[in-house]
Length: 274
Image: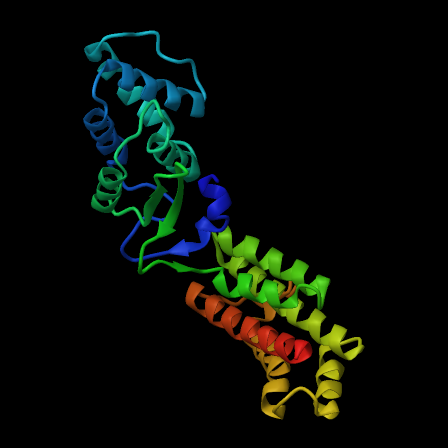
């Protein structure tokens, strides 16, 4: 399994200690040194260079001889390090499992730790398979949304669609509008679910009906969705496109509201499935 299949939401990982979605300065030069240390002869070094060439992709080297291959190495490694993060991680994992290479997994993990990369490669000698495991002190900004997706699946497909859109905004957050769109989509998911559970046409009447039914738990919790809805619209009037009144939302604020909204969604989903 490739890195991207294992870590679909790697762009949403965050850490104050480790690089989790990009490479640190100097990684290309350090990787060259690591590869040279792992290769015992020119045959292995050429195999490494040509493996890199296949991933860039570009033409393989036609050189032989250790000194000539050393001259080739910086160009190939530099080009690889300009590619998406998963390509580099797949190359490193494969280098520890291919019969032609079989680099030391311990050496690789030590190298990655020295470069503050937030993953550890776990390798099964029997099956020759590997997997990337996150180091401690790595968080995911989309974890709460992904968790909520599991809860609404089978209950409200429209809510699920909105949560998927919110996750995309979180994975590609570049500005204030992206943060607002992520919060907006989570609110739309909450609205869709409440309307679906109640059969009503708007969030206010849906909340009122569910409170009246007395089957959804404490009243203060059941009405919290509407409270969040009103508060967010009051604080950020342009959360919906088209409102001319400008507001600002920080990344910390956006994640706070997302966590509150998805917590409410999970609660209502649990009660429904009870």
